[in-house]
Length: 344
Image (cartoon, rainbow, N blue to C red; front, side, top):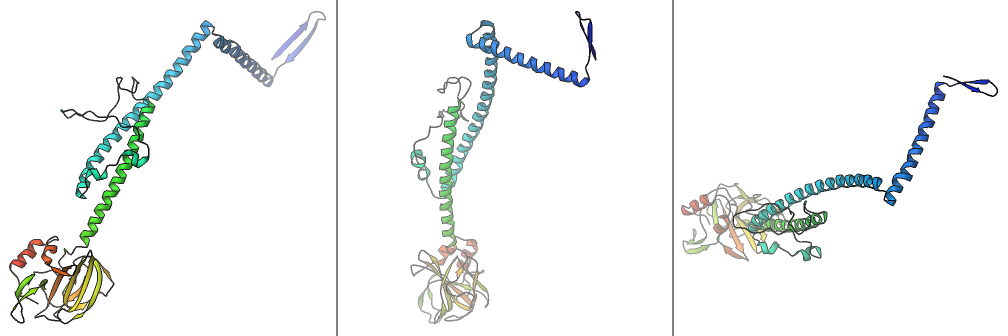
């Protein structure tokens, strides 16, 4: 680009030649100047006008601010509505947990009163109460969402403070449910352990011969108390533990022959007599169904069989009362009704 500059007084002419680089540099400078001018106008016109309340500019700024606030309020309200929906779902799940807790606590032998504790005793000061659900006779229900008539004072839905209180209360309830289920689990485990320690499994797979009670003695013929159950079986048949326990006595007895005793705790003990072989030693911890000996005819016996006793605080009890709690009750009852060959 060529630019000719002529001075009238001296009739001299100058020629300027602008390259593309110089033109771009000149354009950039003009753009910067325009930006500075625009910023100056914005500061001295709009801001000053808004500060001193110029009518037209002030109205324009008010509309801009209101639109921005409306968009922000709409965004916050949509998020609060979503939070309220989620909190309502959480409350519905808490109601389901209450029903499950009631059923499970019944299985554990606990009352609901044993699991309910006031909020102050769990987490210090009482948390805000959850919205009360009115009881009506026609079976209404569902999560609670406050409306324009609610005491929250927000016609478009729950406020953030209200939802915060609601979530705090649900968090406290969840902690209480966790403690309750932990307690129920502990009680169920305790009952399971107690069941595992009760001799309810037959020590020999077979019919019962001679039962508990008075009978003619097979050697003398006189009436005598039989303190256990006889399980006739071939020599070498496996004898299993009727329940979990600790081996407290292993040895030979004049009447019982080779025998062992298991301690199941709480004064409960089982005795296995006339064995041909003992598979455990004193102090061993055995589980229910574990082989502990083999059937034999040692001691005061007329043939191979297992003599099985259950003792509570050292007093013999009828083993049928314990075995009836385990599987195969009908078969054992039939065996007692039609006993096999009696064994001592």
